[in-house]
Length: 389
Ligand code: ATP
Ligand code: MG
Ligand code: MG
Image (cartoon, rainbow, N blue to C red; front, side, top):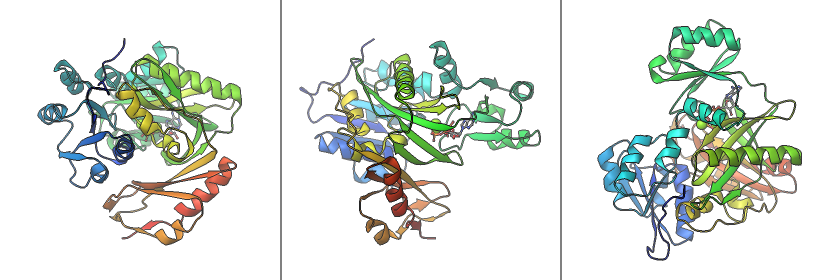
């Protein structure tokens, strides 16, 4: 089913409303200003990262229906930088005639990981074995079916591993349930996946169903948080094709519009399982700003505005390293001069005023003859950065 989208010829400058004002909205806003579009963000924090780059910032919560409606009335199209805005609230905006992309229906299928996995299964897209865990009995069923270790996950609102708990032995069970907020928070269990590599693909799909598929990247995680991305991934052309097919299939399954991040596990035999899909621009696609003709951010804007998609051609091997804070403190980086002295390192900081353990404060991208050469450059620069206590 085609989606409505704003008409770039009659509404200019187009006003893109982004629900959420974090680093993803910040990078979208920068791309929008290059295209002569205006970005308006809705975020409850007066110091949200996107504030400086957006044309306008409305202080407010995306979970407040009145704030959402007032915001919607001021923009041409509403999009999201996270998967947490409730689908029902987006559907209410659509019923009032507002354009929401990705649509409320897409968000409904993706934002609950259990619903997402069930949906992917219906479309024949392989995922790791999973089961709902609504109470103690179902938890015991998960133990007897999967054995140890397995992963207990929150169905909604998880990111950077915050909604995950690896259960290694019976003694972990209670701690896991408690850490994730109890059964009432909405939990499910996943079999432990002994992957040999994690991959990711950004797919941008526009309102006519045309897709732009970025190269497959290797995504390396540390403690369930992405630490670095290498592009292209060191896999065979057959494996890359399988990854593309799976990623596009997932986005088509939810009739998605915009840029989507698709995370995959590769097993020892080279086969793939889809880990999760994000209905938004994605950390594994930050490298596209420097390494591709048209970034995931620009293509997202093009897609939600009904404009043609740009080329995803990769200009060179590349790598991206996340800059994560280690502890709580000020957001001001130390070691900036040394990081800036690394030739070829492209530094990005999100302007966050507070550092918290594992919080993403910025990233470094580098190009190189090989992804590993690029990684060395990016790691060298990122390694100089600390945050003030
Ligand atoms: P994101 O920040 O990407 O949204 P998230 O918090 O939604 O992450 P997941 O993507 O579910 O969490 O998991 C984070 C990481 O934890 C994965 O990239 C992988 O390294 C590890 N992981 C998740 N599920 C499993 C599993 N079933 N078996 C083994 N490792 C897993
Ligand atoms: Mg996730
Ligand atoms: Mg993930």
